[in-house]
Image 1 (tube, rainbow, N blue to C red):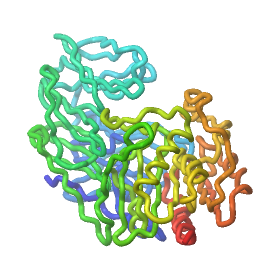
Image 2: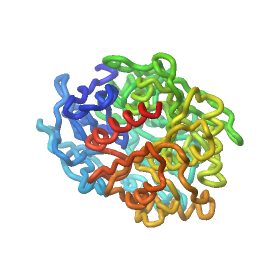
Image 3: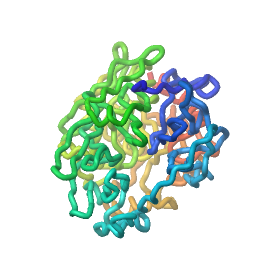
Image 4: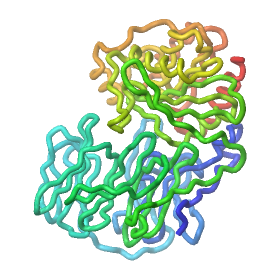
Length: 503
């Protein structure tokens, strides 16, 4: 079977007025992005706009869903295909539904899988052979993998703060590995289970021998970022991306995956592409700062500092149509990881900022001084937009700021009803930068009118303070972060026109 399953390019109806990179389709970033069914692999992808499921059979993709509702995280339980389906996309509400396959598949009995305890924290899981498996208190259960060929063994991925632990439990005892693990499973043999671990800027699949503790790499070489890994009935699959490759599916025999040395080959883009992205580690005021750099095909007209959200997001070596479009428009694009970034690689993991909007802003300034060329534009999604606005107040080299679903002051978050935002504010406490007036440079502000995390009205209230040359784009019906193609078509053409107008 081919090692890269190509998706169809997105049509002009979907990407009209958007730069060429937005035509490239990819799997959904919210895993699992695919399921292995007896009829063939099923993926959630943006090839048909939004997120829809498609089945690969007979060498072609057949869409299984359509319409305005999103379908994500397909799962095959041995008898039926289910997926998370949007009830209210802007409000981030999803529910599970069964999705019929277009061809009949034989029913296959299987033992029930253990289920994490309440809210996925601590407690226990119940295994059909081992019975109750107790878990450490306050640990979050990220994954449970019961399908060892021995049937008396279970692997669990636990998280507590930044720490990750894979635990294997069987009748003979407990073994574990502490490391930068992002996913676990499937079992390759009675003693080996797949773990995906981070070595920035990539994430690779390894086989972990639960008895000896030995680990051997299954994917590589290269800086691919592996997401989900699944196997069943002799077939394996994994999702992966890289800085120049949209998220894709590899499938093959399970024995091929278990043998190791799997080379993940990218699809060549149709049309122009920027030079390959580079990764570097700069020295910041208190810690290393891992950065991705994307240069334009010719001489750079300036630099765009593209900051991630969160604030505990992360910049890995993943593909981005926005970043690639900026590079093709002539800009050097710098994507740094700063204090607070969720880099799991222990050699490069930064500490949290002592003060949000201060220490992380100092890190961005250190990146600017070392790698920026020409005039600088700073911006980002969500918290990244806020941080960019802070940096613009501190550096005269910044000529413009863009906020995509972002905010200008921490007080903009005061009326948020989102649990994640409220948890961040409680955790940050008094470690937030004081509010300040926007920098005297043009701002481009795009925001979903139905954003459940950052109220649009709180951000809109500051428009009178923004200097000449600033723009506001309110996106009706949109939630947080410009998820939909409708939002992209409304925002990005205006954004690139605004960027050109900065000179």
